[in-house]
Each structure stands twice: as structure tokens, then as C-alpha cells.
Image (cartoon, rainbow, N blue to C red; front, side):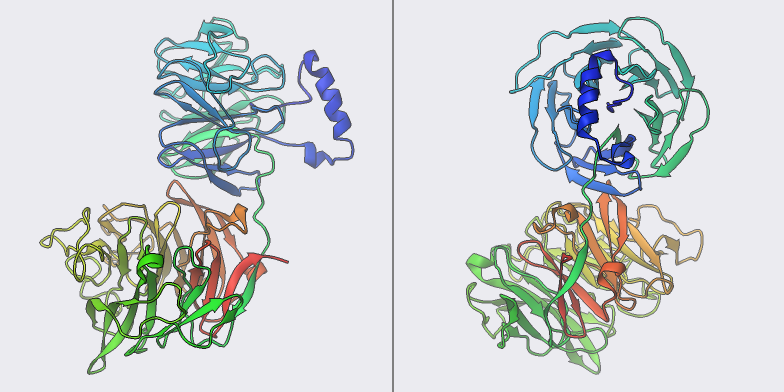
Length: 629
């Protein structure tokens, strides 16, 4: 648990004195620190640590199902992750709050035990012990194991509490030694013991509601740990500053209800670096996006009128990679999407999505396959085959992005057909492609096959449809690390939204036109929201913008602290914002206007093979998001 240098017992006086010498000249703010909270998503192993200002930092550690906790394993005053694999009693400890493998691992306890962490002998270092819920028994060790070995017998053990109680640890009386408390979730009863001996509770009181998850910490820098609970029902932390019965002294929402709470003194959570938009190409004709094949240093930039340009070594090649014939720019149409086959470097296959005239002022959407020598700067001029076409009733809401998911299948989002309010009900009808995301296997058949796992059988919905309920998913992308699908869906007149489909989640209904954002649209109140997938971010139209532009999750190497951050924008307002997804909830929301300014007619984002991000504008410029000079 938290290190409290001012309250440690006499055995630590030499350590305190040494630290006092080392910290001469540091400000009091540098030494001051309180415990804060974090959350762990047990399904993904994503840790979200919260700082005192309400920001958060995310990273992966461990396997789904591991039991998370935190402590100071290397005695440096910083709490870092621990994991307990309840199936075999295996402990995994990490010494930094970053993604990576365990720094130390060993066996202790029995399958089914619950880990507890703390400084149980006042030596300034935390260790991992266990609570055996089947017996109501505590097993304490005062040294950590290593090298995958077993620790043997506990240094001490005793009975405390009832089977089924949830254990926690902390320094509840300020003597510098962590002891054990128990939380009876069925009643919200908290009871504490101030020594490592068998006996009844030294004090107890009620705090929280049945079903809350207890977490303790020194929330005020007072030298004593006090209660906190995470309430899954509203995904909110409630913290109390004294060990007495009463209401919470502070509360705040954070994360999602399915996540597991941890607490600790995280130190300096890596700061988001200052960023800038660096122009890397100009003079283009309405660039729409930027993308690249796997492992290719070049960046490919489709222009709305049909040309695909190559950016390499800081300059745009004069000859287009390809000029797609027959592109119609009616309304919101044009060359809207480009996707390289995952095996482009060996097969040279790539796919474009564009609108073409079908006469009478009407257009159709086309997804067409082309080929190129993977090393060449020009593609074969003639298409290989048309993968699919879709008659568009109007020249708007044609959507745009196409992309291969981590499963190797091609995903194609379409808008609802373009008329205000979707009067034909396309978006809520999975039997039609309009207002849906298609998922097809372009390797399994000619022109394509239906992948296993698609949710409809051709009777209850079109076999190509993967998800529906979209209005105008103009820009969408996959998180290359998780496989989650992020969709920027342009709203009607009140709300813009970003939605996220978890990897492998078939048959999602994103809500339009039953809902616009989180509000009822048809009917305007009392709509049936059962089974609908809510957006993770909404913002009001026109107060903050009028047309969302979906972006990408950053997974590059140039800015490690940004990994896991999703960037998006608004076409009309020109601002760029970001958030991180934790347990299905948007956290760490940031507005980058002070760094980037606004981008006129921001048309799209891009991602190169290395995971670095780009921004495109109809003014002819492509920018790269880079560290500020």
C-alpha cells in the first residue's frame, strides 16, 4: 500500500533520514502525494489509472480473468500492478505503470485465494499475501518470491471474518503497518483489524451499498487509509476521509461498471506530450484520407476526384498511383475509401470505394478491386473486378471508409440513403445495405463469400450485414491493437456521435433513427432503446459542430504516451479532440485546439504502416500529428 514517510516506525528512521537528504531542494508539492484510484477491465487486461486532476492513463497488463491489485514492490514509493491467477495461485508483479511482461513472478497460496497487498511489517516495501475466502483465513508473507518459484509456508496466518467476505488492506491507525479489513458486500458492512492476530474487528461501520466493491487508500495525505467504494450500478467512486460511518466526502464517475477497482500512489502518470500538426503535403485536390499497406513506408492519399497520390520521403510523386475512372462527385460522392489487402506485399491486391453516375442524376456506390506490383509506384489502370454495387437514392450519406478488420474480412459502412430522418426506415432494416456495415470475405469466393459469424441468414437480414442503425458513417476505422471498430456517425440536427463496436461483436444496432446520439428521435420521447448500442461520445449540433469526422486510435512509436488515444474531429468547426476507451467508456477526453488550432474543411484522418496519424483537408493539405518542437 501507500508509503507514508512521516509516519513510519522507528525501524525506518534511517530510511527516512536518507530520503530527507535525497529530497533536499524538492518542492513540497513534489513530495506530497495521495492515493488515487484505478480500474482494470477483466475482459481485456486494460489498466486505467486516474491522476489527482481527473486525467487517466491506460495500458495493457495481464490476461483476461486475472485478479488485479497494486503495491510498491521495489520500495521506490510508487505503486504498480500486480496480478493473481486464481486458477493456480501464481503471482505476477510489474515495477512500472507501463505495458510489458512481469518483472517478478512466483507461486503463493491455493487456487481460489484472493490476493492482498501491503507493507505488513513496516519495512517500507509491499508484499503479496492471500485471503482464503473458504476459511475466512489470512496468510501473510513479508518477502517476495522470484524466478517462478514457490514461497512455501506463510510467515503468519490467522482467522478473521466470515467466508465470502471481500478483503482489503491498509494502515487504518497510522502506525506504519498495513493490516486487513473485510467488506461484506451483501450488507455494505466494513470491519477492520489493527494487528495481525486472530480476533474480532477493532472497529466496524456501514459504508456504501450492497454490491459495491471496496477499495481503500489515503485520500487526504493524512497518513491513515480510509474507505472507498466503486459502485458498478453508476460506475462511480465514493471516497470517505475518516474511518467512521457516514456519507462519502467526495464522489466522481470513472470507467464502466464491469471493471475492477484498485488504489495506489501511481507517481507521475506519463504526461500526454505537447503535439503539433506538421504539413507533409500540399497542393492536392481535396484529399480524403491517408493509408498504407502493411510494412510499406509510403503513404497513399486518395483525392475526391479519383486520383490516388503517393507521399514518400517528404514529397508527393507527380504521377498518380492510380486514377479511378468514372468517379462522380455529386453531393457527398467521390473517391471515398481505399483499403489494401492484408497480404498486399505478396499479392498486390487493393480495393477502392467510390460513387459513379447511373443516369438521371442518380449515383451508385461501387467497391472495386485493382492490382499493382507491390514495389511499383503505379498500379494497373484497369480494374480486376467489381466486388459490389449499391444504388444510392440520393447524393449524400454515401459513407466512405472501407477497411480490413483484424479478422481479415473487408468491412464496408453505408449511410441510410440521404433523406432527412430516414423516412424509409433503412437504418433499422437489416434486410437492406443502406444504414449498415457490411462484412464480406473477398478471398473465399467470387466476387466474395459470406464470413462465418455474420448475424443474418438472408431471411431475417441480408447475409452481408454485420451491423445496422447508422445514419452517415462517413469515417470509420479499426484499432489495430484490439480490433475494435470506431465509427464517426454524422447526426441529423441535434447530436454528433462516435460509436465503438467491440471486435467480433456481430449484429449490433447503433440506434438511428430510433435515437440520435443518446436522445430519442423517433418518437421524440419514450423510444424503445432495448438492444441498441449507445455511442461512447456525443456532442451537440450546432453548438460544438455539425459533422463528425471519425479518426484512428494511435498505435505508433513516436509518441508512446499517446498509445490507445482515439482522435476525431468536426468538419465544420475544424477542431480535433481525443479520448481513450476503457471498459467501453470514453475517458481522458481532450480538446487539441490550443495545440492544433482549427483545420478548415477537415475531410479525414489517416494512418501509415507504422501507426503514425495524419489529418487531411479539402484545402489540399495533409498534416501529420507529431510531437511539438
